[in-house]
Length: 182
Image (cartoon, rainbow, N blue to C red; front, side):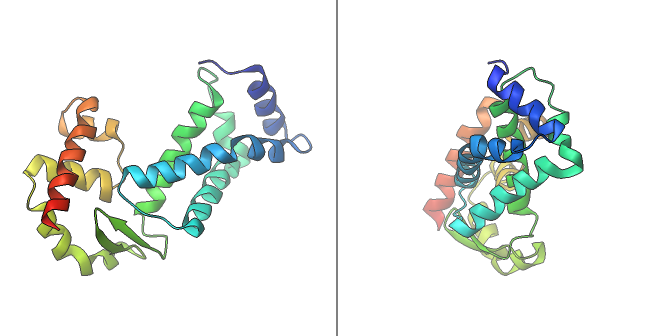
């Protein structure tokens, strides 16, 4: 899908700093970013509360505004604006969920992990390692990259040498094995 005329005009208004452009932009894409936050967390087996979701959404819009709306200026206009923003939002959210910057509790495949700082995960390390020990080395590696490092299917595919469309099924099987061992 290509860039629609409505989005092209809105994008240019935002880049130019036109009056009310940012408000119109947020109104148009707020629902999309909320959906991406919920989906990104859920697809990684993480439960987030409304407050955390709102913080993630605010972070996405903050990144879009940073460096004089640099994210918008770098948009090549070869896809829909919604598609581009979905990719940006997913990356921002995945990184924030795993960088230790949220003083929240997250639940990954039934194991409660403190995510205040990376070191805080150590208290649950034995439980996570016990659950991951039920997996073969490749499954364990993919689970670690996806759930703990926030890597995308594409990034994992390149790192482990599997087809990108095989990452999801592998993760599903691994999560099932981990649930059975919990």
